[in-house]
Amino acid sequence: MTVRMDAGLKAAFDDLCAQFGMSVNTAMTIFAKAVVRERAIPFEIKAAKEDDDVTARGIEAFKAIRARAEQGLMPDMTLDEINEEIRLARSGK
Image (cartoon, rainbow, N blue to C red; front, side):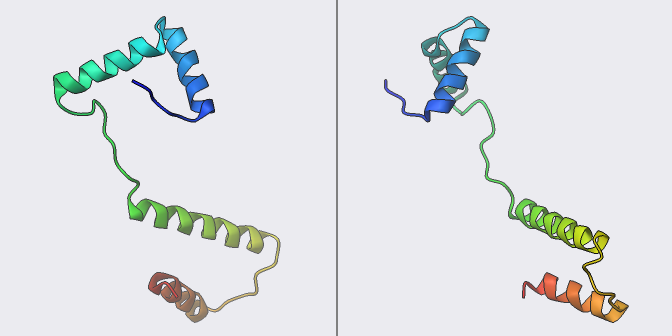
């Protein structure tokens, strides 16, 4: 069997297998046996939730605004203006 992977990943995998006292071939055989035995991949594979991405972007936006405010670069805003900014952000505009 031939497996293609990024050179950096291969080097890290080789090093880790060596620390475990096994070859890459042995590690791949262990993985294959576990898949056959369990009839499943022996770990969860999933994509990040869309909400996680939205939350991360929101946190980054908040940090950027806070940094500008701490530097005195944000004009004073009324409560109505703040609420309008929040409404616009939630609507995606």
